[in-house]
Length: 536
Ligand code: NOJ
Ligand code: CA
Image (spheres, protein in one colour):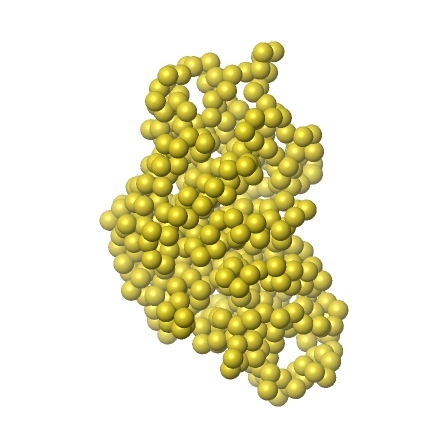
């Protein structure tokens, strides 16, 4: 297959848009679909665009917004706050005209408790939709059906007095879990997928997929799965029997099959694998679902410390384990994690992370605002929006800091809205904003542009093989090799200069994260410097 005949996702760079925070077109303080449309040129289609080729839109469905749209009341419509279905169709058309593919967030595991299905389900024990959700009696001693916990804190069971039973919610009380073991539910969810595929979306980011299959006997979780909120609460969840059930891959294959009925559609799943079988866990996903249309996000890099040995371990092992047709999807930021630049602790390290991400194989995924070097916003207690923080305050779980509005310029509210922004604008927006970074050739934004432009025309980066590379301590590096191009990528993970061995000095420097003209040869890496070199 020639490059041009290959499906788009083989050469894509994905950009996640959190629609509430991208651009507000009507002054209500909340970003919307018209806002995304107005700013598409920023992303692609013009010589000065960022140059990403696909977007993933976090949920814009009708929702009471208990979990900011991950609680859906209608899978086939748009929340009026974000616009209309007509706006979405326009967005799709305008994006495609600029060479931007569109993935939407799909939330298979749960709906809102205000969804019509759940209203029926809770109405009576013999309602035809009763079994669409997961209802259980209390134990004979009156205690909860089992000891499962909600990801957002507290028990995963909620008593419903109308029918005297409990329903399961792996996330918020307002997000009852669907019963995927019921074939009618699977059929209904496939229909929702088809609705969007028929409209022309290019695929989905699938939310929390591990939860769609649970322990068939609903046994208690082992004690080590129960969270002690002083420890890592997410890690606790990995033991849980509310996920990773025996039908997981079967149900995922069903969704992949729906996508396969259309040409060139792609699904990327959200699944944080068990810490003890990371690579094997990811490989099982590829093996058991359908690598032609579906891949899991690789979250190891987002969870790891900024450490060369750790990154070498993660990436070398993963690349080594992948079959040729398994496409990696690496990411370094999303709406559930602290901002990349905050986690790394410096803009210099964030620059080298950009170079690393955009030289890796597969479909690298950027989180909106990381291209500006945005850091976590400061959220005062009275400004908290995220239910995670509201339920478990003070543990650092709150996700608002990574969801603050994209600063477009240095005007009031950073040009994001003419109204009152739903989350505060970052304090550094006077210089960390699109307009300012546009005019500064050495800004983070221009580094991302340069890297994206280079990647687009580089056969080695788009298609080439990945080979591990021996490097000095605190440097992680690899080679990317295609028939006509051989590149070396080196990343200095520490804040001091590192001398490079002779072998690297023979290659031609192509891009450095550090400013100024490139030398004829690179003999050392400056603090936190990352480079692309061309082998001659
Ligand atoms: C994962 C999503 O990324 C997160 O934002 C959401 O709260 C949960 N799934 C529940 O849908
Ligand atoms: Ca708005």
